[in-house]
Image (cartoon, rainbow over all chains, first blue to last red; front, side, top):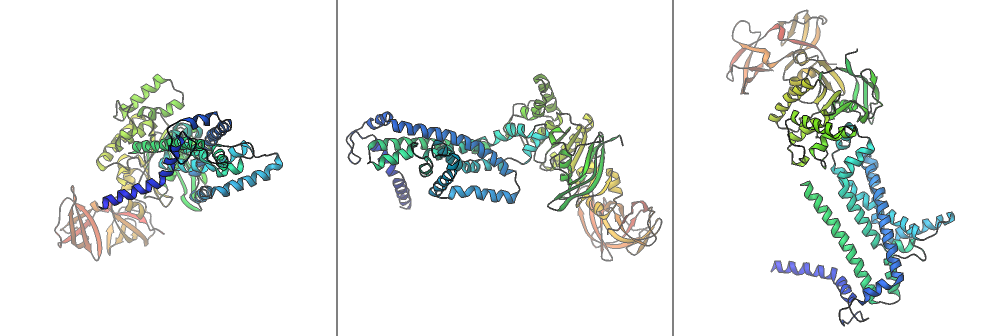
Length: 262
Length: 346
């Protein structure tokens, strides 16, 4: 009896978590315009999606922004994590706290404050557009990369870098040949996480992208304000699947490194 | 001067104002096996890391063949290190680990192959080239760490408690192997350990450190037989340390008794410490007995028995191959040349 209750409970939790998404996915394949009544399977909305120029433009911006921001944030974040790792304990703790604040900060605050910053910089001919959105994405992605690289650095015995230098490696060579391969799983996880975050983001992008530049999230929001169309379902489904795949990748990576450790 | 390969001059290392290494001077001859011995926190590892270049001295200088190397980074010093926890590169094969330094020197592949396999046979791990680090036991990993350092043919090899993580039997084997390698290759070893027996077994010269200061420098026999102060006497093996008074040359008084000894050079009636090794006290029933006491405990230790004899509320630790039963009245005799007199610690 107890076992059945537990199962029911688990089922309910998952039902409420995934039912909306399930409905969304199902109706993205609906042949009629209705979002309530099922009238047959069709890929109509998907094909409409790919013919819609504004959506394709948003997809382009989203992917460009995700690739660039996750790439740049991964480089910055890894270097920063390496620096933090070599600090003394007190300044290290302070920096880590500072690093965690943007993660806990409400997105809306981050978005508005970034917008305020960019507006203040408008004197320097800094206009809101793709560049400002990219900078914003890099800014909120760096902490995630730092958080996924730091544990890998801590797992490495302190003397590993010393041993490389002892054998004649310059600090840069030691970093490339010894440190980098050791922390690679952390870097890859961080990069995928940053990529996911960037694809996902609506609030911060909304405030920093300016006129004329939209990513998919902003596009969906704009479309939804004009009325729910099944093509929104199709687009949302595609985004959900993309993010899901990325998350599975992250998990696979963490599993593999744990197996290597044991 | 010319036979000093490496020399530390007035070396000081401070962390946040506290002195870890306090103004030490030392030198090592070429092809010598030097051990820096001391309890944990005595500054021995910090000293080694300053020689390796991983710590910068707060003040003082380190000379290699007469030239200062303090400003050189580790990768420009002709010195290699075997680290306490091996510090092997886990993502590389054994071959790549050992070849790491040779690759940096841009040595041709055929030469690297030759040297790596020679090193592997030196550490008795032939054919291990393709193995992964994680598939090796602790003792094997330690051998690889030694091979990885030695393959570069350094002028000096630094070893930071390299056998600390191994079990007793393996440690004893490795002690002999290391000593053999050092003599065979003619490389200067600077070895750090807290294990006094290890130091006595392997070293040509021992530096004993405590609280950042050098307590004594000497050969293993010098240090064992003629400890300069109570710390050294206590740290190197077990000993009986009692206060006494130096009466005149070759005469000392302790435990309320006058003893003949062979020491000279102390002031008349100077307060001193007397050190007597447990194996140097003879239990005797004849007239030679200088002290009288009661056997308090007798424990069999394998090669010898360890006994505690109580004499006027003083405990004497005695090692002998002949046991005496507990509660028995015994006489103690110490030969003049086995009484060691040291200056009293301030």
